[in-house]
Image (cartoon, rainbow, N blue to C red):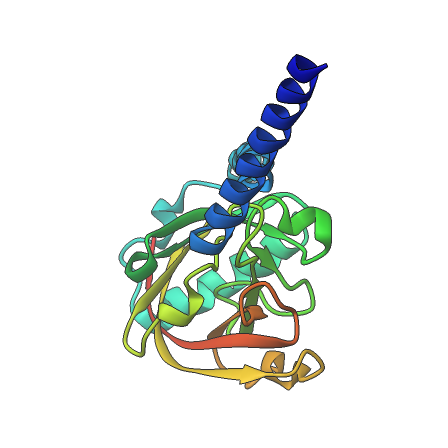
Length: 219
């Protein structure tokens, strides 16, 4: 009887330690179990992005163009790109050196899409179309791509590598808003990038928003 009680108590203590470690890891970094699943899903997003890239011609036709002509050509290619994307598939790579982010982002901000990585709001433009581009991401689950979004500062660079061009944006500011404040995604008739994540961590009470302006296009 005593031996059975010791076995049960040891099992309970072990389970308790595992739970505490899981909570500690979540508080310090990000939720570990969903991170494993998110890694698998991110791999799927990379595969679908590779397939999408094959649908676009060599960008040699874009070399040597002046900035204005290049921007117009990229906008036309981005229009064609819009017709080829599918919800849940990878469409580009987002890099933010200041927070060590380098990850494929997908089309869509539904739950399934955001389990794969940051997600592009379908109702906003695609990079290079000359309008507002918006991307959302988790802070504590599924790889937590925007875990450190509040560490991004003015002047930091954000790079979006698309199958047709690489666009660089410079952070111009941030704002904390309520979930219903969708005006942050409104088109301003110019190319700009908006990043969005729940705020504060472990809560969906508000949204932390990053604004960035286009500074360069490379092919």
